[in-house]
Length: 192
Image (cartoon, rainbow, N blue to C red):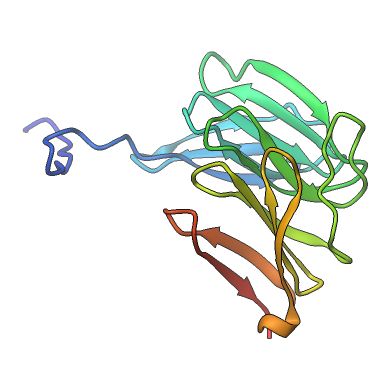
């Protein structure tokens, strides 16, 4: 019997592509990590005190930020038994979404409740913020909400740079947003 060999497609520069990124599933107080190239292997991080709502890899792949219903974000390592790097109480309520900045130095989060003193609050929505994203170049943030508004902020200062609302075509709650690769355009997902 021949041993199993995995072949990787090659790009035009003859470099091996990056390994597949694992996917996360949050359930109860745990984050389940599934490896797409090893479907039978599942790792579990179970150190949250409250139900986990979201988990995201850092841009360099060395850290994972996970958040829970109590407003806590935990940053932990992807190697060596998931060693905890830091923990922050960011909101007074549930965190629904988070994202690392492209340089991996900042994290934005949105959800219920008010921010703590060390957290910059981005204001302007009158209802639940459902999604928040850094632009790929790291210069801007965008948030979308159930109030049918899209708000773009300067990522360093927090100053509002622009707003889109129902007058601009958003007729229902906006649930997700994504930037184009050049940080010039956005796409939204909304209910109608």
